[in-house]
Amino acid sequence: VSPEFKAAGHQVVLLTPEYDENNLPKAENLIHLMDTVTELMRSGKAVACYTPGMGGVAEAVMKMSFGNSIGFKFNKLPVEKLFSYCYAGFVLEMAEKTDMGLELGYTVAEQSISMGDEVLALSKLLNAYEDKLESVYSCNISQGNNGKLENFSYEAAERVAPAIKVAKPRVLIPAFPGTNC
Image (tube, rainbow, N blue to C red; front, side):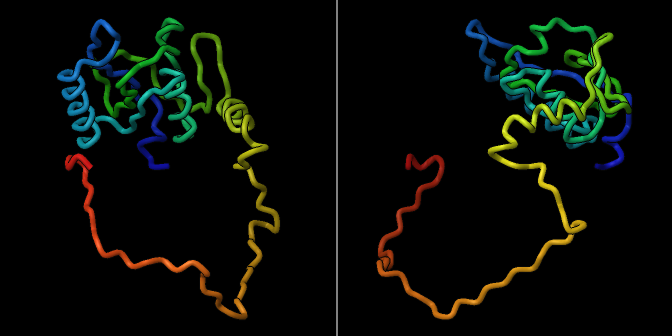
């Protein structure tokens, strides 16, 4: 993890486009928002970015905290704002304080996520998040053997060619985006 992600006290904001009557982003405003986010990231004014998914802003902040191993303190926000859909929105960790977007809170040195008096340790959240599918997709694999892996090698005694032969292509049909492939 790079040093800028370890700094506590970074402001975290939510930038969203304008929405139409169907709660979908307006195209012109969305393009402007994407240009703004790109410029913030390239200039170093934003040090981390995540787009909220099905779990809304709360999920985005949780995953950013996992990835950067840094805690977060939410400002007092309505529950609907934390867990509602946020189509085409961006959660940005800013290097310097800004007045753009909705301020969600600040990064903290403690490895926890908090709002008011409620505090959740990142380790407990990560365990709950990963253990759901641990029996199917193991990601917490013990290293054993003091981290040393056993060497394996195999040499085939004979090479077997496939029974089904594949014809060599005689025609090339290029299909590229925009060619109505």
